[in-house]
Amino acid sequence: MLKIAFHPLYRIPLPERHRFPMEKYELVPQQLLYEGTVEESNYFAPDMVNIEHVLKVHSAEYVQSLLDQTMDRRAARKIGFPMTKTLVERELRLIQGTLSNCEYAMEFGISMNVAGGTHHAYAGHGEGFCLLNDQAVAAQFLLDYWPAIKKILIVDLDVHQGNGTARIFQNESRVFTFSIHGEGNYPFKKEKSDLDIPLPDNTEDEEYLSTLIDILPKLLNDEKPDFIFYLSGVDVLGTDKLGRLNLSIDGCKERDRIVLEMCRNSGIPVQVSLGGGYSPNIKTIVDAHANTFRLAQEIFF
Image 1 (cartoon, rainbow, N blue to C red):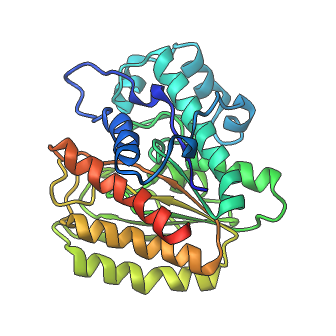
Image 2 (cartoon, one colour; image 1 turned 90 degrees about the vertical axis):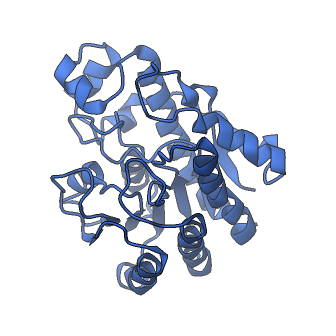
């Protein structure tokens, strides 16, 4: 069964001036139910994560500043959200969603989080709409508590480089970070992933997909991961306000198909977090994200 982490708090209201489309976190689950891709039983509502798991990745000082709401304004501005206790609770729940996804993926081959993909969060600070790094915390959780997991591959296909994730695991040989992203896009100071593929502005489907097909099978063969984290941001679309690539909806869907089929055919469990998507038309965002879930059902179940 495809188990999907979703909590009503994922769609926390923001002031009108904020351009982050929080409504997608409510609309994607509704769309999947409406069309019959999933049923209510596919969803689970994550609890708050045990802070001890978070502290394996993030500094105690930074985490405490979130819990106590003592973060200075400059640090909060770098994140991009108005800092509230509700926002922090949201983050702690979505991290637990990703941790629970890992256990479900071990059982069913795949599990997904409607939110997550907070790859710009560093150990000691947040930025780019990311407070805490869900896939980094989950990767460390697997290394700490699952002896069978000796090598992890993080496949980050959001249009923005996963700078926080790359920095967190820069000295951890058991985690291989792989990112295909826009060369000229945020973050403008990139970190060094184990493998970075920066693409020029306006890269279209054919070049993007051929690059992915050339690289990913070799990574699976060379690194032999026991678990994969996939960040499936749809900000690679040509319509995206914050992206600078030019993929079509069909190209984005084919990207997801390539990754998920390789995971399935290789027998490697995969956890999927949705990441970014900022097209002006919310229907475009919802459809592109929904495609990832549709493919997961088609390929794995």
